[in-house]
Length: 88
Image (tube, rainbow, N blue to C red):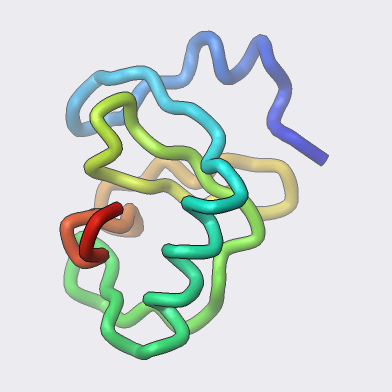
């Protein structure tokens, strides 16, 4: 189930203060493919072990936040910097 539209309207990246948007299917596939290679880490340097089911991306597409059980996890340390994925 997608994140409530009203919540999306007020959510902002805690780092950049930019609005966030749901990942497209293509963006999600690219991120999950990179996670599967074992080369992706969270912003704090910890390994990402599981693929994303859903996610939110900042307006400038530099940072991704996962969604778990319809709840956005907006923690800086657990975000994913997209510069790890070529051509994201």
